[in-house]
Image (cartoon, rainbow, N blue to C red):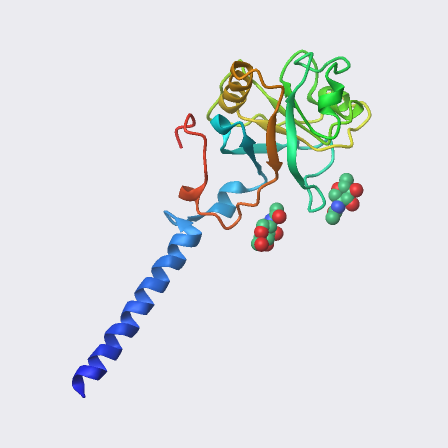
Length: 202
Ligand SMILES: *[C@@H]1O[C@H](CO)[C@@H](O)[C@H](O)[C@H]1NC(C)=O
Ligand SMILES: *[C@@H]1O[C@H](CO)[C@@H](O)[C@H](O)[C@H]1NC(C)=O
């Protein structure tokens, strides 16, 4: 009789401990929820080429372009490095860019002008990156920097090192674009389960 009672108590304890542990594991890492880290940032994943199959964080433009809201979902879209690469003039590879995401380098003109050029070429969104300053520590805040007409597609900034690796890898593989899903919802993914690119030391 005592044995049965003890067995029951031990089983209950075991279940309590394991269930609280797994709940902890699911939502927290070092006491911080993933949602807090994400703040206003958006994530996308590359599904092709394999060399770039990671999840990338981007910061939406602060005060121009369309929002990355619930109606904005792109599955298996192409992330297309544009030509010319700063996209300050009309984009030449419009056939690839149309209906996809334009990948543009920072510099030579405003963020908004680049976004307008991409919109004109039929892009659904723009990701701007700075491959010359591989800034790993911070994101550039993209603000409305020319006061002209507003853009109607979402724009976001990608950290420098990621931009460099994506650009170099596509060049090496002689690919015109990568395939992405934008956004990916990581609200309930613990930090240590995020598939960060290995070249970011975090
Ligand atoms: C998302 O933003 C677009 C562009 O501003 C707008 O047309 C659409 O109605 C918005 N959708 C939602 C669900 O807010
Ligand atoms: C992510 O998923 C959670 C849970 O399904 C949902 O509450 C949240 O609104 C989603 N966030 C976005 C940005 O879609």
